[in-house]
Length: 293
Image (cartoon, rainbow, N blue to C red):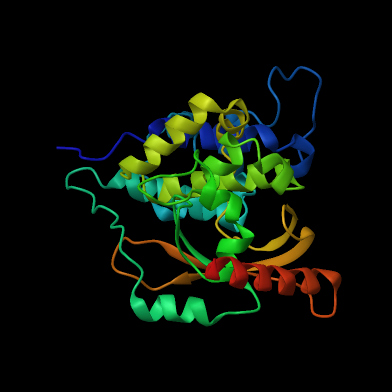
């Protein structure tokens, strides 16, 4: 019995959207004037991948379970997929191949005490641990102060945990907090899309995506684009209600956990010697004072 949700629609839509983004001139083909759809035709991708048009059409309908890795690599090259997109395609194929046995369920585990001690010991940067659904599962004092609005938001509580995606798309306060709201929204949806490919059997994730798709037109549109993101790093511009404007760099590291658990440690840091570092120090003092009240 197949215990996995059918992911053929995700495979179909992902390949179709990647094909639509690839212009003929990018692969050395004439653009022509009689194209009815954007991007490459199916038969053109088939030629570039070295497979028959009929076979590629079957693949783009989501029938991927019997496809070899070599063929997947050829399709990825033909579509000029990025490293992250190729990884996502292989995750989809892996899920499709697991048909006759129950898929292992991803376990949500509590953060071990030594890991929490490590997070708490980071004092000049905001640090937090999130799972694949973007729930905050642990944080240091500065992380809680930086994201005070998320922790306080009525829209984010999921099993008692603040959730970045719910805050971003469902709480109006996020549009003031995130200066680059649109870019952050795209990254958030792409992180969840990558997690859905990695964990198609995660019921809580499917429920989250369904909720966001129903309540947020912006999320629904971004979800339909099938853009994915595995790496979480860069620069955030925030308007904090206590200390004002902040520019912070952030890096994320995967944490080794029990099988199927997916946790990442994210650290937000201000550039030394800048006004943003001064604001972070001020926020640290504010958090310490608030904790004593």
